[in-house]
Length: 462
Image (cartoon, rainbow, N blue to C red; front, side, top):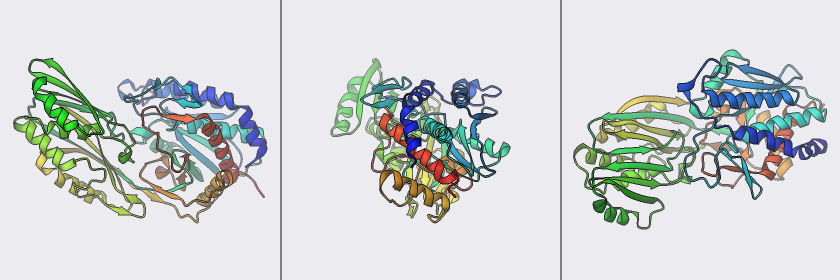
């Protein structure tokens, strides 16, 4: 660590908070229906990118706009390049917030907003870390480039575009996971299904396939008085919250409340979709509705690891996780049911597809989409991993082993890359959760850690 750099960061704390807050107030959600030239993901993500690039220029850096897919902020030095890869798009806010999800309000020393942890907070911490290194005239042997992606949450097409039009950094890290260092990420396997039939019920659950559904809403052709006793018995001792209201004499709306979480750690959430299906399975539904609900409930239960589907697996990179993320069901049947699987790196996509399809055979669902991204592994003896572990130890006073995670970061799409921070060991994950926040003290400390990383990996220490 460098005391002058630390001091500069402390002295410019308020500038960092103000700059970050301005971007947090932008609801940078993907909107391809409003896509335009230079804004492939819609106007709000375009605005977030412009705001970040403007901030970079105001701090004295050069910037590049890669067709609205992503941008870059550069600190030139040597021919080799250190990349810091962050993203400015966010997942939908969902429900259950105490404070406005795009208000960027500070309460009890914590900055609340969607994107504070994932990943605008780290992006601005990295930017101000670069500024601190520059202002303190730290000699560099490698250039430093902050890459700002705009589609990390929905397919990472931004980084795929970057790799087509720009040269990859010599080495890079993404502050979009956990400390101390993530040197291995699981395979991400995603598939979707549908079923066309005439239905008397509707179910809407989930916002994104990589988010545990925090709420599910259903309508059923049944009087409220018939539902309430069954619902009350079902909910006794439950961790979920449920309410029902009459639409008319013969139909009822049911609202199930769970807890949203990141799909890579579904055990940290409460899947409202699965709870809704389990409740509906107790109701006296009829015909294909009853059969489909029963088959889905039997196939999925409340599994977080795909036990019933027969896909549970584990190796050194961790245990498989399963998240049924989105269910869109109306009078014409099931238009979309999504699954997000984080599988050990030894897994094979074809085998996952076979087993899931087999496990769902009694539901009558038909597969409509499939995609996967292979995981990665970088040796703990690699320069990148060793030096980042040194950085963590130097700042926090602990020598820890590198991590294998289920989350998917940009590191999997860039050669010689890992994830570094910013969640701290032992703390509950806040990404994709209601009331996402970052403690101000952590934000400042993260900025210092990222400056340490820049000095360690790009500094001319000879």
